[in-house]
Image 1 (cartoon, rainbow, N blue to C red):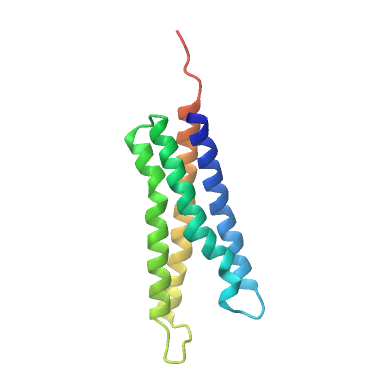
Image 2 (spheres, rainbow, N blue to C red):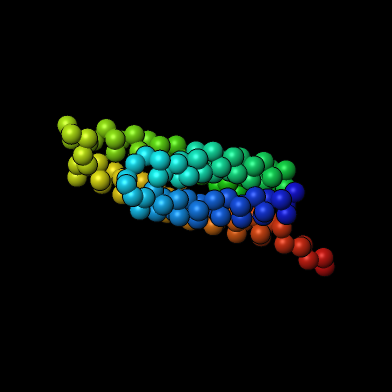
Amino acid sequence: MRRAFVVASALLLAAFALQFVFAAVGAFTEPAHDGGYALHSVNGLAVIPALTLLAALFAALAKAPGRVIGLTLLPLGFVILQELLVTLVHAFTDDAGGSTPLGLTIGGLHAVNGIIAVHVVVGVLRAARKLAEPVAVA
């Protein structure tokens, strides 16, 4: 189970890396439309939560410390916060549906939250690798 925890954590980190690629795809799609962010949405709302739950399950089955299991579940909180930030961005548009300074600032927090989530997942992967290291027999 420890090796499975490492693999699931590595896949979760890869999904987060792809999330930035998919955001760029959406940002650079011409003409701009909501369909450009489809991969970003599917990955963020389905793949990342599923891999988070899978990694947490393997962490628990590998008898990881409670702190590590909690850290492994933390990306779900980041996903929820991301959706809240997106909702707020859309709430703070002008009457014509255009961006406002407040909406753009909240949108920037969406990116910062994603960066923080990646750092957490790097910590999860490190903890998984450490847990999977062979124990030295004296």
